[in-house]
Image (cartoon, rainbow, N blue to C red; front, side, top):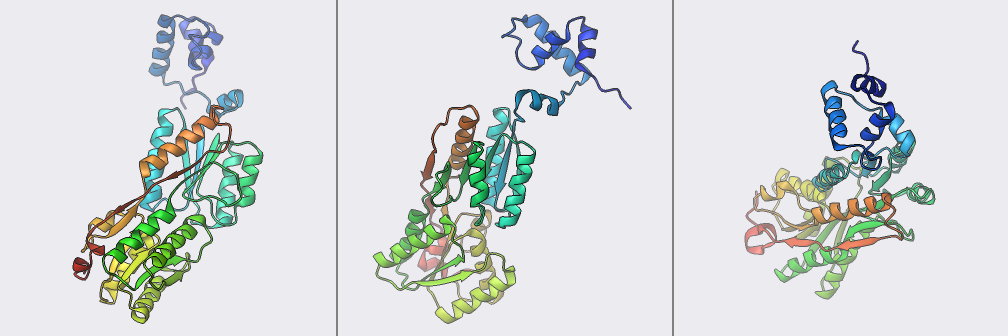
Length: 339
């Protein structure tokens, strides 16, 4: 087995003190007035011999692990996956690493994973909170641990968060369908008390009221298997016969489109909240409310890094606008040509 290289070995080989090597490796060369020539000599030698510092020992000295815990709902969902990737890149450029995990919107799993990160002493937390995790989030805040929530927030809890204007996004989607002449506009959503789902329902209902229409709402259970959702959607379409459907999430929209294809049903006008790569491939292409992923990621990492640097004093709460991307599925003259 190859012998592990120590700082003392480097110092001995270069004929300098262990303290000097330590200062250079901990980015304190300028502070300690160590010459650029000697600094370069040490760093070149470290690279040559493949020295790896003991990260655990370093974290014990500095009190920082340089790791951020990212707790999201579902890493397979393009919305969360794209945000995670952007956060990872931005954090890396600032010397931090990301460890991320999916909660599948299950409170017990979310609580367990957050505790796991606490046990690993991560420096900060970015979390999409599930229902039932309020006490855990409050505990992080009471411990003054850097934290920012996103996609949703916890009502009554004065925490940092980054969200989009879900009310406006849902209103615009429903209003667009009404402006296309649709009169039986249904909303497919979840049984959920989470703020983003509540706000999307509010936006839908406001538009229905504005255009003096009747609401048609179908709620499904988050953890139902896909075929159950597909069958429920088929029954709803056949019973209510809406001429337009607004889906509260992209995965509900995908299940709905599968139901239409599987049972060869007429395609109503369709809008989904949250875009998806599949929506550009479907025929007709699917209209979607798109959230500003890059802006969300930038706000999240900036708020968290400011906390880590001691620059963020009070709770910062950001609401960003969404964008309605109009494609063929919501244009009544083309939506009926779907396959």
